[in-house]
Length: 202
Image 1: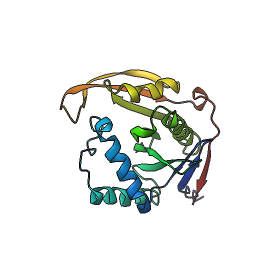
Image 2: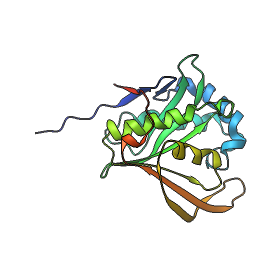
Image 3: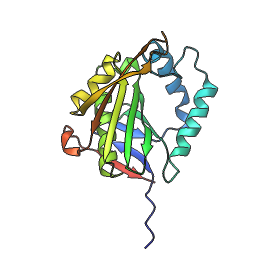
């Protein structure tokens, strides 16, 4: 029997947030968020540099959109918006997907003007739940530099298991300092804090 093709996820909703497929129409608000946040995210994201161009962002958005039409993409990206006012919050993504296991690695960045409100904690919980439930993932993982203290709080607060510290695997893209990588994983949805999550397909 031929297996039915899995439908693409186009939107995920939580009590406060909408996570949806990126759009070219989002370019200006995302560019504004990058410009406002570049000092905070530049050490951890290689592409995040002062003067990050509109053309580069447009190319990325086209790629991110194309991922959602592939049957088994290598990456999946979602733009995060506040449901109450439509404010752009940041981006969250499966930065690595291995469909043979399957496992999904989550990455994220937030507009620094929206930090401290628990938005990214909620978004990561939602994407972890989507991976474990809809995509039947056996493993969700999150890794970051040992120096990225804000990022490491998220898997810790969500109950991910700390698996270890990988020596000399990360670099600060501003200072070029080599540092260690922290690895966290979640393999059971029951480990995550309760959260109402709905998702919608094309």
